Image (cartoon, rainbow, N blue to C red; front, side, top):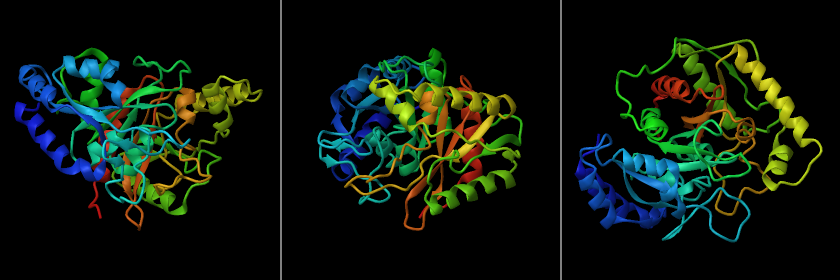
Length: 361
């Protein structure tokens, strides 16, 4: 639980850091300080949080957090006009920069939300994930990110691809978010088990059968998975996960334009994932096939290659910090679970985080 002064301290941190990071479009100091006084006796006790974009304050998740005593301090940056790619943000002070490598993008479209959490400006920030827009910036900024099961929470996206999500300091903070937005109950406490029965059976797939993954990114993730096995958090089973490349199916659903093979790609991938989760509760992959690219764009790379399959299938998925490449870029480990298993996925993620705590460069 936060105290009323935490909102003021968050605003001070934003005032100092945001001219450099450009994580916020708007900051609301007068409103936030007034709200903090009124929220002191509610479950969240005035915990400051940020919302994705100017419309984020009207989202279902933001309304639930406010009702539980959360205090919105500002709207975070999202992609601006002038480019078709979404892995960037435009804040009030300029383009949003990655706090680990200012010459690289933080990812997107929940760019500012990830940066605000990574720079310790707020404990959590809302996001939305239609192709990886929470998980990609979480991976590239070295924070926790959750895409909830499609349809679990209200979403304005008519295609059904986008799902509400959160960027947070940890899976425990994400549990606070999920408990509040699901039913308004108390924030997560220590009596919540950090993991299911361990070691948890898991399948590791470095590329889902189709993605071209940066060798160093794959190496960082493989090392993280080996640490999870050594810590007895997971037990790898002798199976893999190979899907059909979902790119054309995702694009067809998003555009609403017919594509003959889209339905078959989606049906076949659903069958393969259903078979996997019928026998194994957890799938592990890199969150992205690549490290953060420069501000001039991704070129021909699809940073979404390993994430958008689960927007099509609807499964909950999280990104947990896995380590760093030699040039100082964060890498994310993606955890995927059965549809509706959001709460148990967060419990598993807490155990994963505990095993992967590292000294950062």
